[in-house]
Length: 301
Image (cartoon, rainbow, N blue to C red; front, top):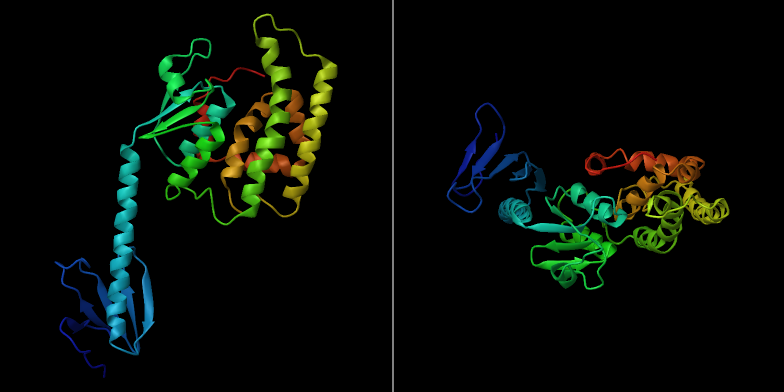
């Protein structure tokens, strides 16, 4: 026969062998329960989890209650952060088809953060825009009182500040993450941007001329060399660039991969590498990315 434990508040739950200690609902524990069975007891916490402890000393009673309280406070803290994030005013200065602007839009959508896109006329840069982007480049980003320019700095800021929202895109420590963020900036982006510009952008500019086949071939060879490194890395058991989880390294590639997919010669380079193609199909199927692409005024290849 189980005997009541010391202290008020203990009662045998009718029809069971459980003893329950009911915390005063007016206390900071908010009515969390500690249940006893045999020689263990569990703390049923505010987050719905149940944690078991050895009933060696009565001090463990207090430990269980303390854990309930800490979990409840953590939950309240997370809710407060989410509320603050929802109330923060965010403005993305750029234009819809800028790949660096798309980089930031994709990240904001992954985090479920509202923002306003402020279109920038690069031929007529206003003093207000130059005040937040002194080099006159896009994108720039206003996040409450924080003002940033340079797209990779903006993306790191969002992923870090809003780490608790949506997927954690900057797990630490992660040597692979840091490596592939740098690879994107110094190898992937320059090679792909030059090829896409030559094939897709330059001919559409005023006075533009058809792409020079010799120039295109030379640029394609550079992209080939870069993608060979990606293919080997992904083939070595890496679902994503940083391993098994989707991270900021993947997000930072998506805008240029989209541009490649809309540029037939560039798309062929991806399709020729099964692991790179599978990676692109995986990350481009994410709901947040679909939301991003749906908002773009894309023209035919």
